[in-house]
Image 1: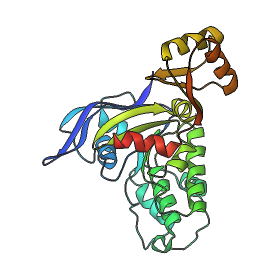
Image 2: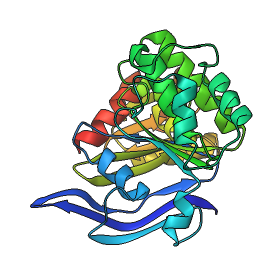
Image 3: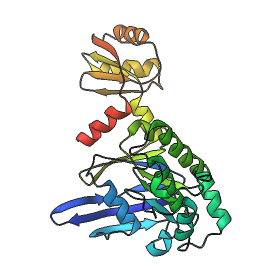
Length: 295
């Protein structure tokens, strides 16, 4: 499997605080990987390590399949914390300045501005831009040099709904062109609209990596059935439907397949299983992440 970001037991300490604690993460080429965690969990510290803005105390980093990190980082664009730009210059003038680092023809610069919705800002100074426009300018700067990977730290923080949609559309368009994304955000519902995978960070530890498909499986509606004998109940259900998806733990069954609960109850009754409770359960995206972060 081709990983565009891979770390092994990565550690970053600031004095007595371990901001990144033996993190081994895996971001596949073409992913939109959402980094989830509370404020101070270590998300930004991890991103800074990947970008070379700070050095690890321990561990290894592989970027774009290479250990030669300086070379790999030339193909990475980033927006960490707040965008940095020249407030008294226009969007075009800003991009021309930053393009000196990655020689980019003016037509390509104008194309990037059109992509992020800043193609018609004219002589308006960047310092007078709205928050959403500033975020788009930061993304435009990150796009110079045709990066294969974009690392964005809270790119929709503080934006209104229309601004959030604009940034989301830009991310999806670029991803459709082959750009991989690592995005930190605490707006779970918004991230859930675009992410293909997630890394959950708590107190510097990568608690879990999970794909969007796996998350959808965990968050779907299920039937909870409390019985007197889960082993007998499980055997009866497998005999009834071999491909029925369910978990059995303690005295509870959780059935995930789309099936009528009355049929399930009848199967269990005929097998001599006593049923104490039957009810529908579901867990939403926010509940799932809060449970993991609490752990």
